[in-house]
Amino acid sequence: MNNPSPVTQRSWGEAFKACFQGRVITMLFLGFSAGLPILLIFSSLSLWLREAGVARATVTFFSWAALGYSFKFVWAPLVDRLPLPVLSGLLGRRRAWLMLAQLAIVGSLFFMALHDPQESLALVAIGAVMLGFSSATQDIVIDAYRIEAADEEWQALMSSAYIAGYRIGMLVAGAGALALASWLGSGDGQGYNYTAWSQTYMFMAGAMIVGLVTTLCIREPERAKETVETKYGTKDYARFLGMFIVATLMFATVFMLVSNAMSGFSEILMNIGVDKLVASFVSEACRLFISLAAALIGAWSMVKLHLVSPGMVDETYVAPFRDFFSRYGKLALYILLLVGTYRISDIVMGAVANVFYDDMGYTKEQIAAITKTFGLLMTIGGGFLGGVMAIRYGVIKILWLGAFLSAVSNLLFALLAVSEPESWMLAGVIAADNLSSGLASAAFIAYLSGLTNRAFTAMQYAIFASLMTLLPKLLAGYSGSMVDGMGYPAFFIMTAVIGLPVLLLVTYVGKRTLHSPSH
Image (cartoon, helix red, strand yellow):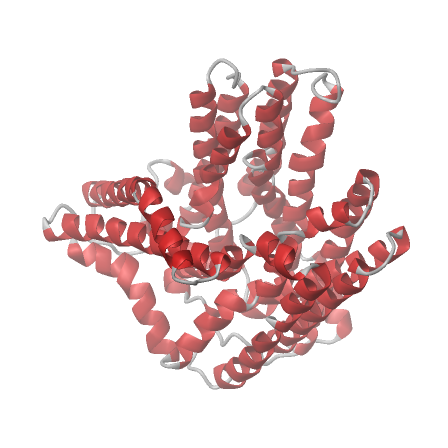
């Protein structure tokens, strides 16, 4: 693969013509398949549970079912290397895993649909965890497929199509699922109707036919067709999977056990004069790191006891990191810093967006029509614009432009915060924000794809994908407290300012990756 910044620049005609390539259209359908499950774990499921009379505190626990998205890099090496019996021979390595993940999503949705949370909440929870794990696995395979199916210069456009499909899938699983459940007789004054929700989730399972048919129609990437010589057998991979399960259980157990201790630590910090927001952030960060340390100790112990092959662990987990740092040297740290902060303005601001619209006096109809439907169109338009411009001018230039526009567009929200609620003004701000967000996302995904060595496609991209949201989401969790402390105008200005250092990082990294060795 070439460097993250393609040298070849295409004409506008060539760039627009590329939008209609078969591989680009394929990513639209795979993006739909990836975007469909996530809201069926979050917002749609939450409403189903609330209508079923499940306590609010219990409902929020279900969000943990999606933790697989944040830690998918842990089992990405298995997806990258482990052949599936029968399926791999029939479909190839990537398509076999894609088919398995999609069938697992369908099965999870049917499993949830067949159980009423009023009677068997635990089984619905198990189904939600299955859905989260299956969906995260599908993401791993789609990301690897996208990188291997096209050269680097086309990655921005592939990303644009993926983003468009993903957003459409989210719309179907979000607004579409709620409208369908209501039409079938649940909610909106009609009371709880299990049959309505059951049929809705079955319909969503049926919608996965889009992904399944696409998987059967596409070709296996040439890179994935290559025979991967391995000295490990099924038992080795089974033990490796066992190590993953042990590490996961260690993390979850310690995370719950240290909860009270970290709450006490937060109080101690506040007693010595530390700001409440800072104290809470520090204590939760310590809780996360302690849990991760426990998981690592569990995995390390299995290696030391020779329950898992040390060589296999090195090849699957250590080698991708070693490869990345050997290719980029000291610059690798700046690249990782860029990956971890590029989306910071968008994510921190977005965490309070819906609350902001409501606080400003916009009606639910305005919010739905402008921020959701119109906003979706603007995001898709921005994504394709970013893809075409990346082909025309190169990824790094559009990466910088996307970061700049994302930061500047947040200033428009500060203007919105001091103005009377007007539909035309909200539409203008949403247009600017979603266009810039779509453009930035397309360029950023293309950039991450360019960083990935195809010898470690699934593992390295999964790491980048997890890293790019970790810090922004941690900060976003405190966005409500920030608004309470400084008000909306100052908060939006702050989110614009924290995005400015990203421009320096893009400039610095972009100049130096032009001379980095190819991989």
